[in-house]
Image 1: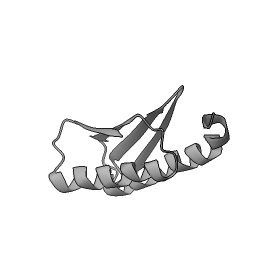
Image 2: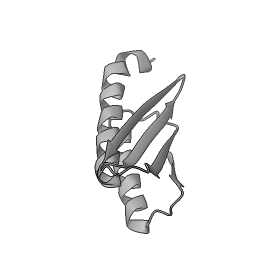
Image 3: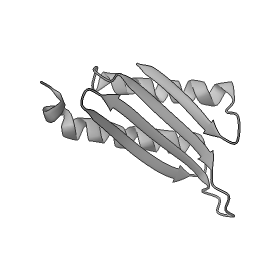
Length: 98
């Protein structure tokens, strides 16, 4: 699976990118026909501590699954978004399998 990580107005360090790749690539265990995925990270300009927004989008034949989470850290947000995508895959698995 091709995983693209995009950040808005900052640069993600190598550890964060490796963490994201590790988490997102685990989705292959639940559905092996994922063609690509995109992860968007951005910081919301608010005084709120939970200002880090993580969006995960995966592409599968005929469909696109998306999850967006806002948390204190990008790691937490990505983990929650990947879990939400996993649930979507499980829910739609009957439809996805031809």
